[in-house]
Length: 244
Image (cartoon, rainbow, N blue to C red; front, side, top):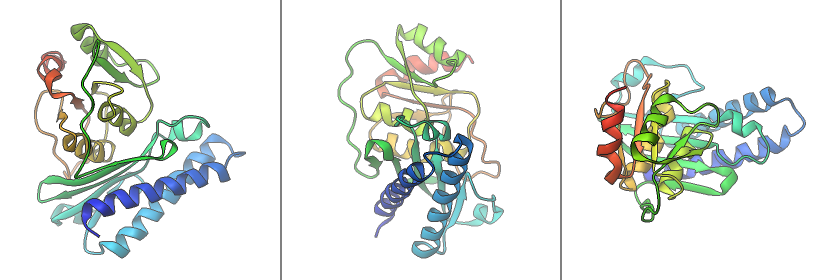
């Protein structure tokens, strides 16, 4: 199984496991349901990597950060459950599983599973979004939209679309449900690696808010800001975000 297929398979299978956990913990407190989902998905992925790619390193939100990854040519960057809040709320589908592979300085494979939607978006073949129609749609968190997103909305005369996890937000652009995602409130590599790999495969623009390249497998896994958008909107978006 090649790396693209493995990323897709593991993200999909972890997502199915999470659906089972969601059902199993239906009567539990939300915090217990979140914790069980995080742990079981992480354990599943780590066991799978140990079996399928034993020589590769792994950087996971739920695991200890082993500095040996900095000396490795291949590092899997995963978020076993992106959007724990949404996962804990029955009926919500905007949560995800992220599986990406970094190799020799680049993201070379990635998959974003949206288990509650029955969808996995995976490299190398990701359909580009359909042609845009109407005002640009800026996808934002369900809580108070960040100032940078409001500034982009105003500059583009756009509208806001509320959604949960980072993976679901980027997937919504790929699916043609939104057009722009800007984030400046703090993230880590596992929040964006797989979504960025998928977005790039779909022909979308990706960068940091100052227009610089996104870098992964860094000593500090914090990667605090992100732009993902339709390529034709990138110049207008960056004109705003570079001033932040």
